[in-house]
Amino acid sequence: MLLAATCLFGLERQLGEEIDALGYKRIDTMDGRVTFEGELSAIARANINLRFAERVVIKLGDFSCESFEALFEGTRALEWEKYIGINDAFPVKGHAIKSKLFSVPDCQSIVKKAVVDNLSEKYGIRYFAEEGVKYQIEFFILNDVATIMIDTSGIALHKRGYRRKSNEAPLKETLAAAICDTARIFPDTKMFDPFCGSGTILIEAAMMALKMAPGLRRFFAAEKFGFIPETVWREERAAAQDKILHNIDFRAV
Image (cartoon, rainbow, N blue to C red; front, side, top):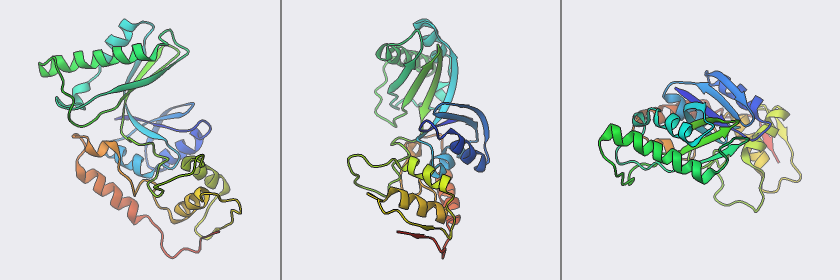
């Protein structure tokens, strides 16, 4: 399975090394995105464990598209029935940069029509109620090449779940984690932040010292996906839980 993890610009190296550490093969790296290969369980493992990623997406395919017809045919040719069921919802959103197809609303409409056309042929119906599980389809068109994806994260991964409320302009948790990584946090680190504000850097440092996975306390969109067994999520959470260190000498003030 081909997956991609998105990140803030500048964090590609750290994200790539993190993906390596999880045991997956990197395929490509571009600004704000690292593509890698992994089995089905990689969806759960990546969402739970990646500190520097904003989202994990399933990459269905990419193709050249200099016209709406090319966008339609390329999208329609993908294997949508492997993921989206007859009752599932599949909204579309995306971006277009430095491409002949620059109108995002028009591209959204074309991609949606192509997916409907594909599934209509597979399921033998023309109307989809879309009342079931939500599969968020995303497209990214850059330099006339379209990449079509399904989001598995839902709420962005920088929202770890340990903070119910935030200040008006808090430091993103993924960026705070990157700062801590650069500072080289160890289980016996003594960390002082006199201008801590909401404490994001200290919290991320503590989680890093404990080797606590950032996604242990939250829910992901893909947990509702029918093609991923619930046991996968339980096993990956249990594995992450087992890696947490106890009785360390870390101190954060």
